[in-house]
Image 1 (cartoon, helix red, strand yellow):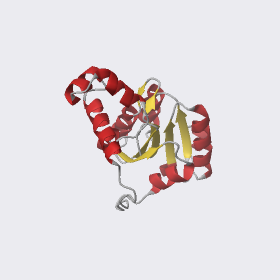
Image 2 (cartoon, rainbow, N blue to C red):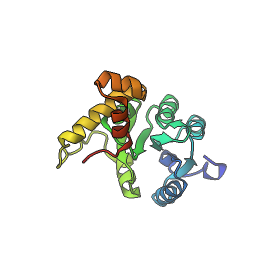
Image 3 (cartoon, rainbow, N blue to C red):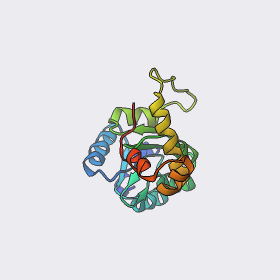
Image 4 (cartoon, one colour):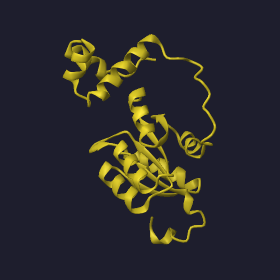
Length: 184
């Protein structure tokens, strides 16, 4: 947080945005500032962790996959410095395993990209006691299979050979599945 914002009337509206997509980061940052947030932006895990430890914002929106690592490291650092912070994970590679990891580390929500500023704002400001509605369109069998493969892949620390062995699947077949987008 900069010195010029030190006297801000609502210090609880501090927000850390971490994403390596610079245009998206800028747009979301401006949109959240228009909604009253004091915004800090970072493009790497290292920068995000530094801001999380230095300023301990009340809110954070973190991309899952960044060029220098996993955005969950930023969530963990924020949780250490400010346990009551509300963090959201954004990703273009959504799956249940990473969503569970994000929630275990303290994220309050998990949004698929592209998420707009309204979705992000609503997730940040949602009542923590309110339960989300069940999905209108449950997952297909193909999607459930894909989610299971992703879960095993994450449990194997993203090691393709180990995941293929555990799933009793050829490594190349697994690589093709992992390279594709999730089925609907």
